[in-house]
Length: 470
Image 1 (cartoon, helix red, strand yellow):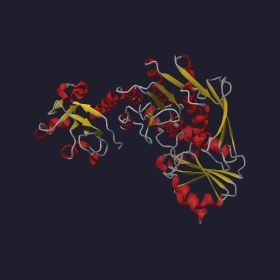
Image 2 (spheres, rainbow, N blue to C red):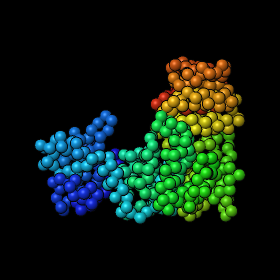
Image 3 (cartoon, rainbow, N blue to C red):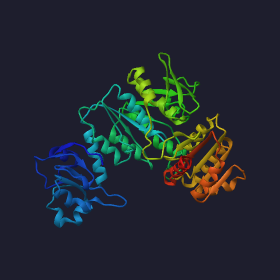
Image 4 (tube, rainbow, N blue to C red):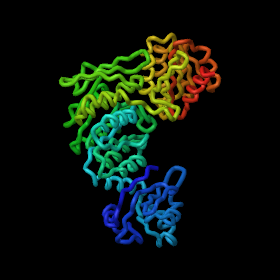
C-alpha cells in the first residue's frame, strides 16, 4: 500500500458522509493518513475496512484502533451484526466501504487546482503514462500512477498522494467491466485525458470491440461534459471518429493521410530501436528510442503530443524520449529486446490480447536481418466466447510472418485444429516446447515470446537465455 498524509477533520467527514454516519467521533479530531492495510497502521490514521474476494478487513477493525488509528470506516451490515462492541468504537458507518474510499479520494482531489491527465486505453497505458511523466517532469512537479495502480483501489490511493507541491498528476485508469471508466473519471475529475487505442481487451465482460469502445470512450464523454482536453489518436480508426464530437482536442498520428497536430514517421535500426521524426507546421525533430518495438514508437507519439501541448521545450521532449527505458526488474517484459549469442530475443511476456499480440508479430516482421523468425505464443486469456476465433486470427497472421510457430495453452490447441501448416507446433508442456525450440534456433534468429500474464511465458525466456549462458 502507498502511504499518504491526507488529513480529514470531523467537519469534513460529516460533510462527506453525513452526520448520522459518524459514531463516537469527537468534534475536534483530525485524522492523518488514510490506510486500507491493517498491517501498516500509523498513529492517527483513518482506516477503511475494504472487503475483497479472499479477505474482509472488518476482522481487523479493533486491532487497527488499538494500534493507533483514530477511527475506521465500516459497512453498515458489519456494524449492525457487531453492535455489542461496535457501539463503543469511533466509526463511520456506510453502505459500501469501497465507495467511501472513492468519496474520500474525490474530496481530497478537489483540494488542489493542479492539472490531472487520465490515461486510458486497451494497450500501452502504463508505458504511455511513464513516457508522459518523463516528459512533463522536465517542466512540472509531477505525481504519476505507481506501477499499475489503475483500478478502483489503486486510483484513490494515487489521488490521496496529492499535495500542495504537485503541479501535474498523470493518473492511469483501467477497466475490467462496463462502468469502471465512468467511476474512475468521476473520482479523478481529469482536466485532460488520452485513450491510447481501442482493442480487444477483457471480452468476457465487454463481449466485443464495440463494447470496449463504448467503455473506453466514456472518458471522452466525461471530458466533453467538463470542457476538458482530449488527446486523440488518429492512427486508431475508431478513435478518430470522435474528432467531430470533441470541442477541445490535440490530435496525433503516424499515418500521413491524417494531418494532425503532431505527426511522426517511424523507422528502425537493426536492433529494433525506433528512430522517430516528429513534425508539424512549427517543429521538426528526431529522437532515437532506447526501448525497442512498434509499441514504444506509438506510445512515444502520444507522450510527445502531451509535452508539446503543455509547452515542454522540444529539446526536453527529445531528451526524455531518448533516455526512457522500460522496467525489466520483474523478469517479464513489455517488448524487452535482448541479444544473446547473436540471437535476438523479443520478450513481450507482460500480457497479451489480440491487438497487442498482432503488434508484437508486426515487430517480429521488422526483423528483416534475421536468418529465422520464430514466434513462441501462449494463450490470450479473458476473451470469452470470442477466444477461439481470435486465436485463429492470430495464427493466420503468425503464419505470414514467422518461419516457425511454437504454441502453448488450451486455446491455441483448439485453434490449431483449423490449420494443417507445418510451421505450427503445439505443446502441452513448456519442457517439450523448449526442447523443440532450441533445435530450431539458428545464429541471427529473432525469437518473439508472448502470452497472457497467467501463461507465465517469461519462464521460456529465462530457459532460452540459460541455454546460451551454459
